[in-house]
Every structure is written in C-alpha cells, then in structure tokens.
Length: 165
Image (cartoon, rainbow, N blue to C red):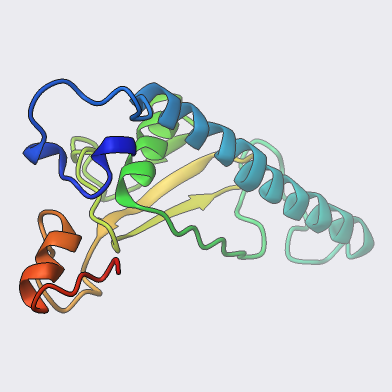
C-alpha cells in the first residue's frame, strides 16, 4: 500500500503515490496465487478421487463422465484476505470465465464492493471451473460495517489507543 497505508481511497486527494502497487499487478498476483494454490489443490484432489474410482468401481463417482463433471467429495479451502484482493481476484476469474455466476446470483452485481470480513464462496467442479455462489456476504456480522479507515475509527472510539498499536 505504500503511502496509502491506513488511508481510504475516498479520502486521498491527488495522484496515487508512486509506491502503491498498480491494480494490474494486484490482479496478476491474485491470478498467479489462484493457479498455484487453488487449481493445483483441486487437481490433486481430483487425481486422488480418480485413483479411488479405479480401486472402487462402485464408489461415489462410478459411471461419471467428463462431459458433465460433478464436484469431488467436498473439500474446503479457507482463504483469508482483505476485500480488495478478493474483489480483484474475482473480477479476473469471472472475466476470464474460470468462474461463472451461480444460479440466483445477480450477474450485474457490482464486483467493486467487497467488504472486509465478508464471506465469498466459490464451488469448483472436477474440471477446475468455478461457480460463484456467494459474494461479499456480511450476514454473519451483527453490527454495522465500518465504512472508512478502521484505525481512525478505533482512535475515536478508544480514547486514542489505535488497534494498530
């Protein structure tokens, strides 16, 4: 973040600082992470399940074909990051068609607002293609979202003792 650390984009005036990572670099970093971690993991799980299929011909994937790939035995990957990186990742994944909008999801839903501490769920099939089933959901939070710099809000709430200290 460089000079932007601790500031909101709406409060910044003037050109963005030279030491701020460009959006294209963030998107590229997010895409590389997706390929090297998530896709690699999915392929390893699919490989193990196919090996089990050969050993268990009447197992859970018996008779399944490649044209209509079904999810592997459910696996979960928990990814924790700030909303900006998740937003950038999803914009790239949807734009490249590696992930599609799920049923009931509003394809016009803005991918420009992804609150920190929100929950996003992508289901990935055996082919590695994803479906976005939940995006930036904050239903689990039982208070209003802080719209601004949390460090500054904390300073005003705790008598000057910032959470960042």
